[in-house]
Length: 73
Image (cartoon, rainbow, N blue to C red; front, side):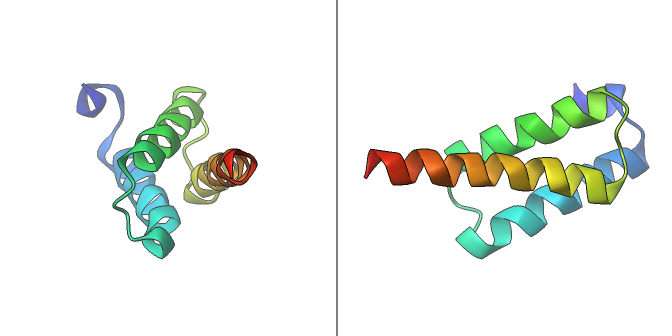
């Protein structure tokens, strides 16, 4: 479970990063939420736990999703 892996501050940073990124799209796209959250977790697992870095990694995941959706038409 994620709460066993990270301290409260890291979890809070991860949640803030995820919500900031998904707010513009309403946060209802579960596929996007799952993918972006996964990238944020991977980042935190590498020890990169500051909010700006978590947000940056999540933003890159969002851009990749947007590019994939654009290519699909």
